[in-house]
Image 1 (cartoon, one colour):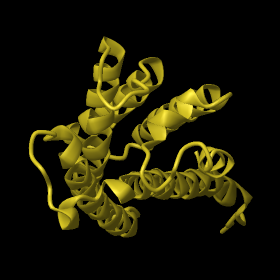
Image 2 (cartoon, one colour):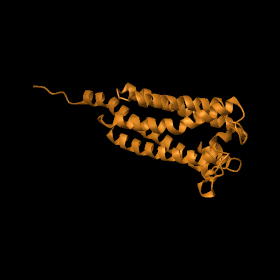
Image 3 (cartoon, one colour):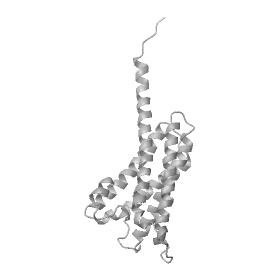
Length: 211
């Protein structure tokens, strides 16, 4: 996604345009779709890894992360419309799936943070995850506010309330926080997994006590 933001900055304004429009630039669709599929697979891998370590995830968190993965795939399979208004079924599916991305992961993160907070070795991760998730909720509300002039086209918004000029920046900030949430979980999962792998080795290599 960083590659798209930098390489196509002249064609898709990162301040005002949503990331979905990268599919309309040359060779942008392949990179954009690959990024979405990769994030969905990474999310599923993290959840499976935590489950294998007997980490309690909680039903709400699992449902939220699952919905996030499904929405990512739908956004990749069904591109938006390259027009001011949504005109096709694909465009509508993309819009609804994209909207769910803004709320499912932050809410799933809050639910998971609540579950992790009571488990040994995960309390610090839970605090960081909660902070990132709360930041995601704030940016999700800000992005919704920025899109209101498009959603309520019949109402003339005063200039101070029209944030469309920075809606793309808000969206990218939200995605950054969401990816940071996944990164925090992935790093902690690697640390815990590596510790679990090395523990039996340390026991086996320990001195043999004789009477």
